[in-house]
Length: 266
Ligand code: SIN
Ligand code: MN
Image (tube, rainbow, N blue to C red; front, side, top):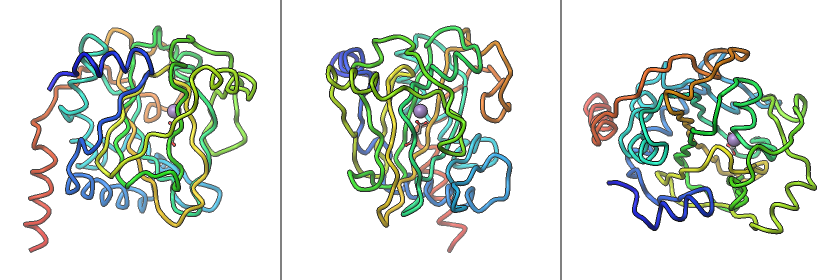
């Protein structure tokens, strides 16, 4: 179903749109199980927090069937194509664990700031999709957004190589405070299966998860095929180099996998 005028207006003004329960509880539970399988793997794409628990699994669509299907799901590909205005390829795919007790912070940043500086992506014609695989609440390290900050272009940032295991171009506190004076600061929360579409220029972060509840979120970063990256400074499983347009699968592609797994377990 195409995005409504109201949703397009919200995206334009605030830089994000929240879709509660976009995926069913069964689809979300399947993907949560897939995430556990992936985090148990000993692979270079699975990065860990200082405690040893998983922080993120890059490129999980290449080695996990559930995440392969999510990566071409029409419920996210179609709205992104609508807003970006054409075919898209997968620039980056992460399944972030933000594990109970041990999930560490993500500093304030704009994703496009990193893609421009590190990968030479020409324009911010790229979009983020977040799919919640756990319930996300105020307690378990939700995403934080500064609404409207996507209208500020690429903001000055410093390369933070130390705070966490993942290097990021981060904004300084004065700038974040100034932006929040204008736009406020919000935390989109909701049940597992909810989806958020947010601009690659939107300023965002997330606090550590000291709660006893996991907060797993799959992030897909989709870029217009004409706007593909020009520099190959990062590993190809972090900043992908396959610019083939994604062809959306059928709407029941995940539901079919749920049924297959149920049959196999019987
Ligand atoms: C990100 O900004 O890419 C991840 C943030 C999070 O998982 O909380
Ligand atoms: Mn980000």
